[in-house]
Amino acid sequence: MAGIILACRLLGHANEQVTRSSYVVSAGRVEPVTAEILDGVFRH
Image (tube, rainbow, N blue to C red):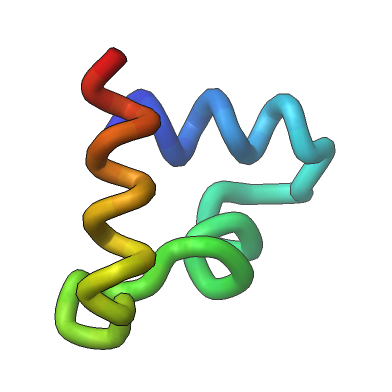
């Protein structure tokens, strides 16, 4: 997944697993309102 690799490099993490465990959550754990806001931001 290119997004994780790019985020890992930008954040200076040693590997992508550090980024994944710190920043990636499953869609089931995101509040619906938060998901709606993020969808709106990333669609533009």
